[in-house]
Amino acid sequence: MGRQIKHVLAILGSAATLVCLFFAYYTVRLAYVNLFVDDAAIHRTGGMLFGAMVFPIVTVLSGVSGYRLLARSIRKRPASK
Picture (cartoon, rainbow, N blue to C red):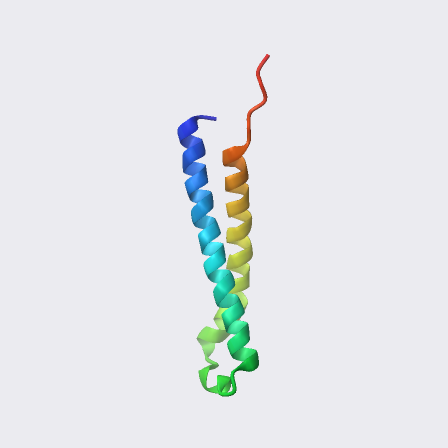
């Protein structure tokens, strides 16, 4: 694999990892607001329900893709004979 392709894969993997961290933070924040904030019933809307379902899925998918892209960017090719 070419050097430039490995750099592109590393950049894409880093971006996917940042997306994963962003959605992981908001998933934890959403759970905190739902469980521990006294007036959370005021804030419960369709958007909060949507976030509770979609944010964990996006977190896992972007985390897995970030891991795979970063792992592929640092993988060494076996020596050819």
